[in-house]
Length: 234
Image 1 (spheres, rainbow, N blue to C red):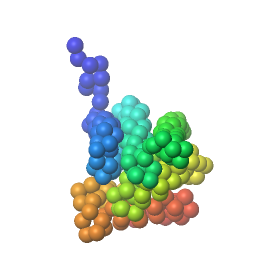
Image 2: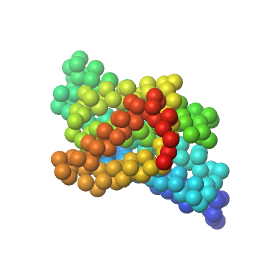
Image 3: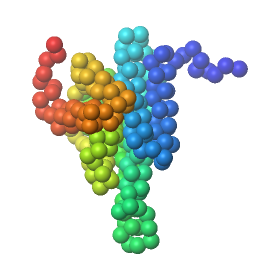
């Protein structure tokens, strides 16, 4: 017997499913190699952008937007939360132990990622309900949050304490009443190119690519709600 969905999925949907698979791989690999996990999160972000391009050019399916949000839970919710948890608990200063300070650190290391995942799920649900057909969205995109977290680690400028702080910040920003416009096509291409270079060459030229990507992502994070929407695409 054939699966009932056979023939009902488009090419974009298959790319979206691949995004989810990459997210799962990032979760598993984070335990042994956080750097590779961070690169896989960026690879998932590339797939997330690619499925939208394919859907616009070849046509999407009714299930596409639902699949996209479900995949994003894995790749940009669970995966970055796991990455941060592994980095934080693997650091000698924050490792789980028997002392009171160690217990508190362990509690923070579990609680913040857990709340981050729950906020990502809530944010994606409201995105499907209200923002899926708009050129803007309320709250920081899960893809952007995951990209900043992954690339901050790859750039070598965010240690365990900084990463858990960033994760806590994004836990709020994902559901904050701040409007973010979608990236213009030209900027999405730049972002995707930097993501690809970071995935392929994370340490080349003194980590130039992850640091450039981090600058791009943080610039959009800080400035987009105030000035990006006024720009005219050329």
